[in-house]
Length: 201
Length: 186
Image (cartoon, rainbow over all chains, first blue to last red; front, side, top):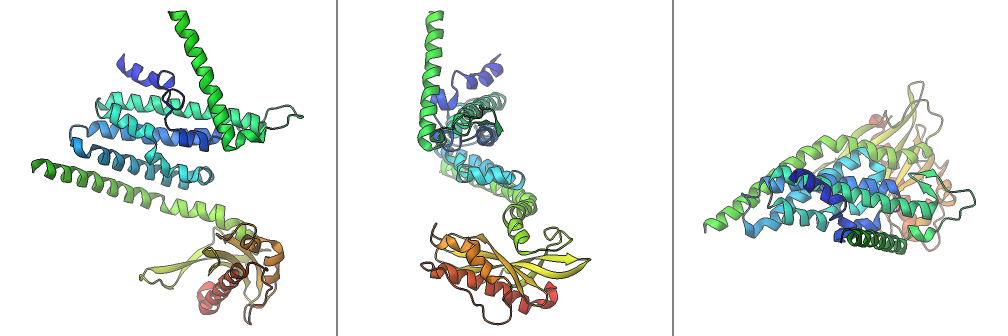
């Protein structure tokens, strides 16, 4: 099943922030809580799914020389839609994510998928690809955000979960904490892959 | 040659389609965004400067035209009325004044008999820790009970003269609106 393969590859094989190490700017900047991670991830997923679909639909129409410009116009349109809709319905989240919503335009995951996948495959496969990568990105941001939230403020999705004498590491909420958390996650993922490779080989 | 025509055509079409879509989305979300901004940015200030009302000033807000800007677009003023038993006894109006780092927005509560009830800063880009001190109660409380008719008297914050003056001129602007559009406002 090619559709299923295109969909599931985004969850592990080419999981964007950890495997491709792409899209790090929003990954590091907004993941101070799990909810923020989900918000950013879903906004990116929406843009990715629709830009992939339209790029793929128009792939035979767009001349090679102006393809990047065309992709960016398509991507930017969906980013503006997300921005307006978020302001209208999730005002506080959009205030927090702030500049990182418009910056989805230059998120290299999205342009990367448009160029590497959607412009070479049919719309259905591109939809599956966009959805898979987008959800993989959302989950990664959620995991990273939750770890930082748990250690940095002792809460998970806004609920207190740590014991009462727990002293939060506020360091984890600061930018360096994002790098540390990302590094540890990357290391863990490599460890698992190595283990799998050894077991398989 | 054919290539160039095709490139121009495709890019133009994509741009036009994008512009068209966005204008529809903009129109569809405009009112809702305005409502959200009022709810999260203006509402706290309105609630601070008005007291003793039994209506919802946010829901009862109305707009009046107060002239045009330099491009000829109409300037709209949003009025938040405070009512008791259906009678408007005070309003909250936002005035703007030039501070040190840009425009300062000040919500001003003015009673029908021309008294300043209170002021609340809605937006500013003043220097943190210096000009931003105009938000503090020790500064804004001075405006309570002043007459909206005579000259405004308030002590500025030392080191933040421009910011203090910006707030003053924002308050004066709001007072000016009430003086000039009294019929429409009350």
